Structure formats: structure tokens, C-alpha cells
Image 1 (cartoon, rainbow, N blue to C red):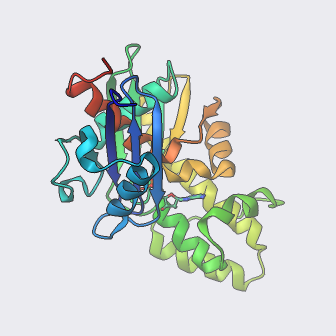
Image 2 (image 1 turned 180 degrees about the horizontal axis):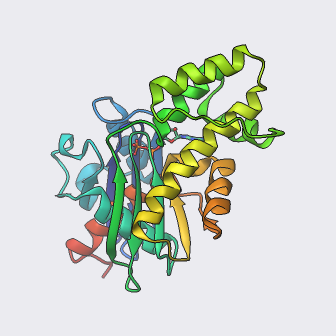
Length: 265
Ligand code: ADP
């Protein structure tokens, strides 16, 4: 353990903070996620959780890299690298051979096109509007009186999809409230909410061009029903994995490892 080197990646998102530590071979040795992001104690919480799990101090980390919306707030890291670069690095390692990555986070949705060498070739992003992001799902879950993590189960119980026609989150909120008031089942509305986010993500994906294999990352990838809607709309399998929400932090840890010329002796 004495010669072991560790590389830390920190993703300071708008909704959640994520930290991943890898060893010199790029293997994950610690990970943490906290549902509060930039401008909160979230980043410090996840870094401490990873260091505690390793029984290490920050001084024992060989190199670190911050990414995400609030990356500029973590001035102590060795590197500060864009989300696109870190997400591409993470996804290429998590999903070998992946060509399209759909990432939906708290405040943006992006689709990355990855070339045959695992490098970012192209991307499309929606970071101007809450519709089509995790924020939209959170607003709707609040109206249903449930947690965002419960939306998938509601969607799966739907007998039909109650479409959401408004393209703006504020108007969609009123539309959902009036559908509830008129007796539309919550499950059908939840299906409509997921469907609306899925269709927006597919619109972005079609802009960059969808090549299989396709993977989904970001916190919204945890919503399996929404992921299946994207797969059905695109007509391809959409893979995900346990580290999907931590993909940016994992990529940041790999960037820290590579840029510092790291690896175990
Ligand atoms: P960011 O990097 O912008 O902080 P994340 O990729 O961490 O965003 O995703 C956060 C979003 O993921 C939240 O806004 C929420 O909508 C969604 N989310 C978080 N946990 C879950 C869950 N268990 N099931 C479904 N969606 C989730």
C-alpha cells in the first residue's frame, strides 16, 4: 500500500457533488455522491467521504482534477478541466467502444459523440432551459408529492402516456397541476413527464447523430423508465451502469492520472 498512488476526480455539479478516487491502473478505490452541488458543503462532503474510506489525507493524493459547473470553486485541485473532456474520458472507460453518450444532469443535458479512439468528436448541449433536465423532473416530482427517485416506478405503473405539450417548465408545471385536477392518473402524467425529457434528449442526440453503442450517464440515468423511453425513441439499446452519475468525476480522476503521467511504480 505504501507505493500506491491515488488520483482524485471531483465533479461539482449544479444539483449534486461527486468524487471518485482511482489507483494507478485507473481502478476505482473510493467514490461518493451527495445531493447538493456548487456553493454548498457538498464538494467538501464527498472529498472527505472518499479520503475517510481510504484512511488518507489530501496530501496523499498524487494529483486531482475538478470538473463540472462549479469546478472553479475548488481551487485546491491540480487541474481544472471541462465537463465535456471529463465525461468523454469517463464514458470511454466505463463503456468500452461507446460512440454516443447521453448525459442528463440537474441543469443541463448533453449528447457526446465519441470517436473510435475514445475521444470527443462532437457534442450538442441544452444548458439554457430547465425543460429536458433533472430540474424539470424535480419540479414535477414535487407536484406529485414524491421524490425524483420515485418517478420511474410511477411511470412504469402508467396505463397510458398523458402528453405534456408545454415546452417551458413553468407552463408545464401548470399543465401538470390542471391534469391532476381533472383526474388524470398520476402515473400517466409521470409517464408524460418522462416522455417529454426523453424526447428532448433524443432531439439533441439526433442533432449530433446517433451511433451505437449508446450509453446514458448523469443522475437522470438512474431513472430506468426514462432511459427505456430514450432507447425506444432512438431504436437502440441504451446502456448504463452503477457509476453513471459519477461518470464526470471518474473521468476527472482519469484525467488527473494521465496528465500527471501517473501510474504505480
Ligand atoms: P449535476 O452534475 O448537474 O449536479 P447530476 O448528473 O448529478 O447533475 O444529476 C442530478 C439529477 O439527477 C437531479 O436533478 C435528479 O433529477 C436526478 N436524480 C438524482 N438521483 C436520482 C434517482 N435516484 N433517480 C432518478 N433521478 C435522480
